[in-house]
Length: 195
Image (cartoon, rainbow, N blue to C red):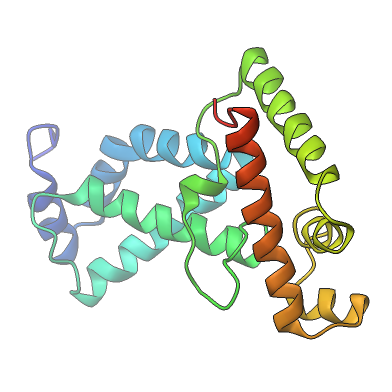
């Protein structure tokens, strides 16, 4: 059986599990372009994409050999999910993916853009940032300080409290009032802060 193009993914997996290593090669050849493209779109780095791709297939092979594969007829989505999880692990390890405070929650697509920004996007984003900076300057000094430390210096509320010599609750309260006051100014001045 030399022509494996008509054999289903499930059959190739069954053949590989029973010892036919060429079946795995056929499976990889069948899906490598789609899987590599998917990884490349997210990580935008050829060397990293190659590493993730290789790690994904090592994990796939180990899962198949251990008999833990049960995604009948859905090999490619399963392989993409494995790749996706490896990408998340990479960004976690390299700390390029921000985590929400006191939480393991994240959203990959909140962090990584899978499209290239246009010049118009950059201009609009720049205008939004300028508008926000102007609004911040109208806040009371204590609120302005906490907001800048939190968002521009990426300090924790504990660090802000220590630096400003107040309790964490006071720092949190100042941040809360800063946001409330900014929302009021946005409503009063009819400022649009979205693209």
